[in-house]
Image 1 (cartoon, one colour):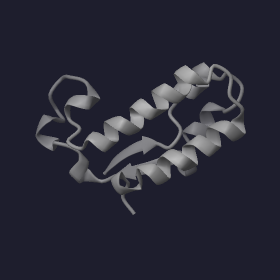
Image 2 (cartoon, helix red, strand yellow):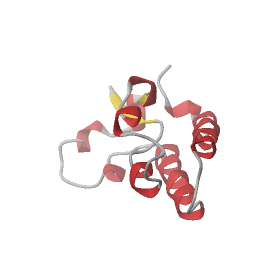
Image 3 (cartoon, helix red, strand yellow):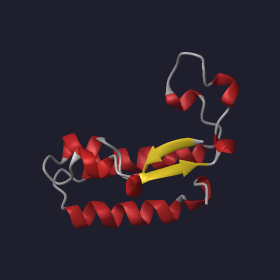
Image 4 (cartoon, one colour):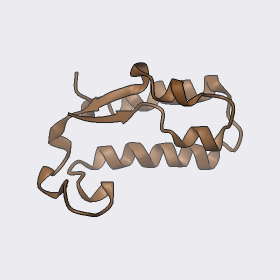
Length: 97
């Protein structure tokens, strides 16, 4: 099983004081990705995470987070949680149920 955070750890640095490390590492913030989204033959080879991703939706989800952080220089906890909800619905197909 491959895990990802619903809210990426980069928000700790981009928006200091809004979330704690414990919140972002909590079970509520962890989501399982479908194993079919990855090429597991490449998993043990050195390289970037993007090289093992088979499904473009996984990469698009990460890019959406990057764009949010780039465009929202200041964000409230509510804005981040609303974006999390929207993006998880948009990419629901990549998550294991």
